[in-house]
Image 1 (tube, rainbow, N blue to C red):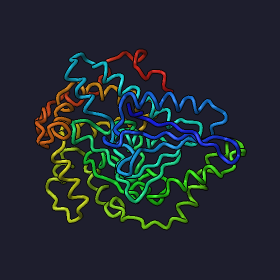
Image 2 (tube, rainbow, N blue to C red; image 1 turned 90 degrees about the vertical axis):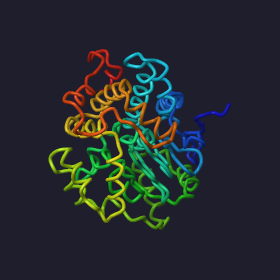
Image 3 (tube, rainbow, N blue to C red; image 1 turned 180 degrees about the vertical axis):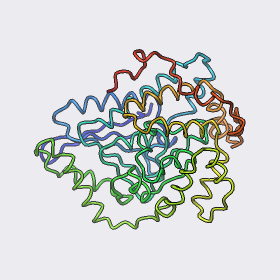
Length: 373
C-alpha cells in the first residue's frame, strides 16, 4: 500500500537534521484524511522534541496541489452510515484536524510550507499555521466551503479576521480564490518562489548554520527565504484583492447580510474576479452564508484556542444537518452542481436556525479541545 505521508530527514552541513513531510495522495490533490492528520501530528510532535531536528518542511506530492482540503467524501459516507449526533467520525476528524492546526500555529521550530498549486480548506489550515509560508506562481488559495454547505473552518474564524478591509469576510462568503500576490497581501503567504525552487530551498536550508542559538533559527530561515525570493525575479501575478479592496470594504460594511446579498445580486461587476465571487455567493448555501456572517461578529476578539473550540461545535452541528451532505453530493459525488439547500434563500431561513449551529454538544469541561490554551 502507498504511504499516505512520506517522512524524510536530511543532514545539514552543520550536522543537524531537517524534517520533510510530504502529503502523498497526488490523485486526490493530497486531500487530508484522518489517517494523514494522525501521522502528521505524531511525527511533528516527535520532531519538535528532538534537539537535533532544527526545522520542518511540509509539502504535497505532485505539482497540482499542496492540499485541496479535507477528505469530505469520506466524512459524508461516515455521516450516512451513522446517524448518531454528534457523529463519532466527525468529532474525531475535526477535533484532531483542529488540534494539528493549533500545534502548527504554536510550533517551537521553523515550519516551512511549500504552498504551490491548489491550497484550499484544510490545506490552508496547515499553511496558515506555519511560521514560513511559500507561494508560487501556480498558487491558488480559497476557502470555498459555502459551495458544499459548510463554513471557513480550520481556524478561518481566527485568521480571516486578520485581513485588511474585511476582506476575510468577503472570502468566506464567496469562496473567491487568491493567487500568490493576493496571498502575500492578505497575510496568507510570506514569500513567492519559483515553481521549480523547492530543491534550491532544501539545498540552502541544508547549507545554513544551524549551530546558531535556536532563538535565531526563525530569523535565519526568513533571511534565507527572502534572499531566494529576491534572486528568483518571478513575475508577480496581478493582485485581485488589491485592485478591488475598497469595493470589498464597502460591500462588507453595509451593515447586514441581507444588504450584502442584495448588493452582490444587484451590481453588474465589470471586474471578472468580483463577478465570479458574486455568482459563487448566489449559488452557495444560505445557511453557510448566515453562519459565516455571525462567526465574524462573534470571533472578532477570540483567542486561537477559543476560535477552534467554537469551530468544532459548528462543524459537528453542520454534519448533523442536511446541507453539508447535500453540498458534497452535488459538487463531489454526483457532480451535478445542483444542490437542494435545506433553506433555499436567506429570507426562508427561520429565526434561531443560525444560533442553533453555535450550541456546543458538550459541557465546557468535556469539550474535546478543552485543554487548548
